[in-house]
Image (tube, rainbow, N blue to C red; front, side, top):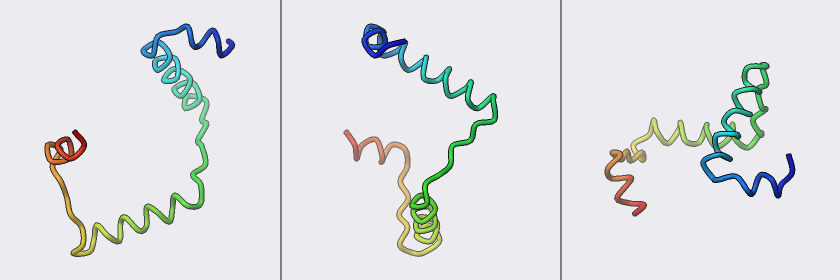
Length: 67
């Protein structure tokens, strides 16, 4: 399938197709490798969560923040 053909699809169709592709990769045991920087970010966030600096928001607060 070419890019011009893909662009003719609706966004819904493209997203559904991407979902099917990821599912097919997962079913074959494909596990993408996380980049090195990802481990650092996760460790920093865990450290912050366990400290007194962590601030947790409800879903509603988060939605309000990004409106």
